[in-house]
Length: 468
Image (cartoon, rainbow, N blue to C red; front, side, top):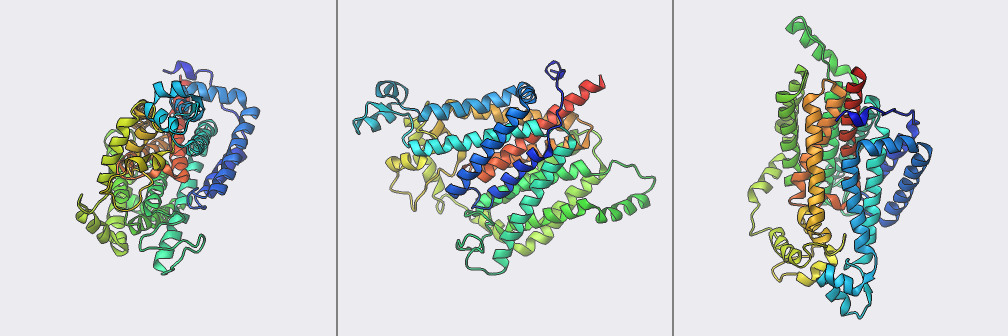
């Protein structure tokens, strides 16, 4: 396992490459989470240019990075290759072999060449999105070379989440009818710079995951001679910079509750408790102050602060949820019918809305452009084999970050691994009932957290090599 790390030599890449990446991510959340076409396209073009510039200037180091992380990068790149294959025109006879249902649709139009995708413009847009996520992943793996850069990335996500949380909570509490920035009508649920309150909630889960990682990385491992000394140190810690971060986490939790997102709140608290308990049970040299942090978050945030800002309403929504009043189960039923038509090759990345109109049930009320279940939608659009590739990728993420979290004695490495693990668990839960990965801002921040987790693994391995 260590053999492929023996030739790793970190480069002194200018920090401005990292700052350019973070600036891109900071701006991405503003135009409705990357939902506005012109802003997203301009941002993608800038990101591609940053990646190309880094590759040209630091190609040997980029090659090393690719060698270290060849498993996740290969799995990721295979998905991009498949999207491109879905988009490219093929002879109609070949399409008929690969995807009979797609061929049937194009035969009706009398075309001799067609693509697997039923919606080529949407698939091309999905290809650009996937390419931008891959660039973020590669840049993150290459730029997060030490504990300092990991800490910068985690703190950046805390700041980004706090801004959005404060803005979202302010608009609801101030009673504004329209959003101050985008002139979008405000409802009674906080949505920040996003249109959809569940997207806002998922974004906050990612930023709160980074906040947990930052706290683990900055907690003190000092031993105290008495309880009085411990209490004194705890009191003085209020004046430390991380206390400001603690306040940021509280603001984000308040905004998360104000989103009234059922699965958003559930995913946050379940993933937070799961990672915290696992770290306390299996982590090495876990500081006592970590237990104080987790308990304070649960007591102060859940039972005190959140109760003032709508936690009871979230609980009522959870209790009142039933299949009789929800349409999403019927959408899933129709989605399964679509999956039967496109099991291997998919209908084309991004083509769900176009393809779904053919299989729309009369029982569906309202207009659904997404499946509200990312697992099902990925299977429909990409095909079951590609969904399995993505599943292998996520399993590898969970295995790698858990291994690092349980084995490292470095608090910075542990914090990065915990942030990545918590974000992955929270995302896996939310994906089962909603569509978080549809939005570029959420997917980009999630990919950044995955890169943070893998980078923590590489840094830890390098330290082991140097120690030997």
